Image (tube, rainbow, N blue to C red; front, side, top):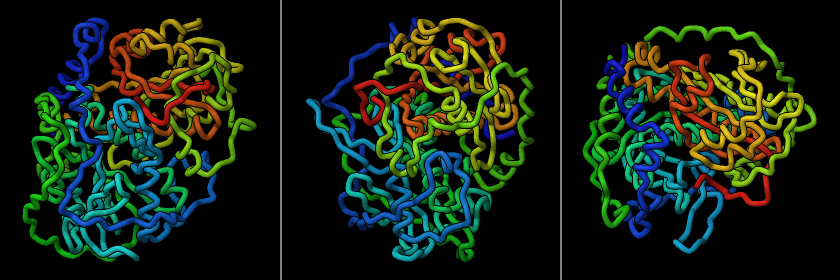
Length: 503
């Protein structure tokens, strides 16, 4: 058993579901004059500019989206800068009547970019050992602590990936997302971290940098290391980069930092439900992490009789490196109701289903509604556990249904296909406690992030969408009975109008 018994996060999930009634009753106008700053800025800290002459890769996008590293490239500052830029960097800007939007490399709910990255590193070529905050607005690091503090991360993670020279800590500032999404922000913490992690894994694989994702850690220890405000911020994930680093020295004592940051908004609104969800899913110390991580593995998924084999991709592949795909990836805002090849859907499903390098697993099941896929009858399907075939649940034209399930939007109705990731949360809570919600949400978002990358690598478009929770489950039932939907993507050919990121 992990943190808590799952009751708090089950209640959180249920209370933040979308329904027809909740969307109608809960609609509220956005206070654009109070829109939060999309960056955490510490004016008193001097920037350490990152190199912009970034090392490219020659590995094709579809070969690295699975996030499997190669020979183990040593880390230096230029490689670190490359990984940061293509996971959380600003890749373009756009002015509009309300101001300016700085679009990032990975998709984010509402283009609000509430996830920050902190770097805890040994000395690597070009960068002294220390703890740094990555500042995307000027592509720089800002030093928070001097010296090698990896020992704090190693202790907090119960020595998982202890030989990595660099650890990235992902953390959310809740208000930067809650301004628009209120109590649903804790869901979005892991949705958005997952899409960032998908970019990071693919880019790291292209550069042969070994990467491990760590979901089990003592939250308070990492919060103190980078001095997060416990009422407003929270650590979400650790990514260990590289290997064969010298042993970390004993962790030095931590003094509070207290660096001032620019106000995010005129006023901030607290959403206690978000804080309560995070508090219930925390782990207090190294022993708790070790015990939580020792939970038994999930049961093998049940076999489904395949109806449609998923062929390997052929002519539909666009031969580009992952960096080029990330730079042109966006969130498609128009699908022209044109068909896509069956091998393209096969490539997307295989990429999304690749096992991520996580310390703990809570796998999801992918369901598909095919509207216009060559060689696949329109209808509802579930992906087999080996991601090699589809099992048909029902034939039919479900464009109107998927439009409704996606909160009445046209995008899922117009797409060539829609993908939904569902999981039975009860076994997850039984194995992993409340913290299991983080893992399941992250796994679903990793699949969604890889769907983005694979679709664009194939010359297609994709967008992540919200949904009516119980209605999605009901549509795929009885197969999906008892399961909860955690992520939803629409895929198809791109129309004339796209925007660079989720809005």
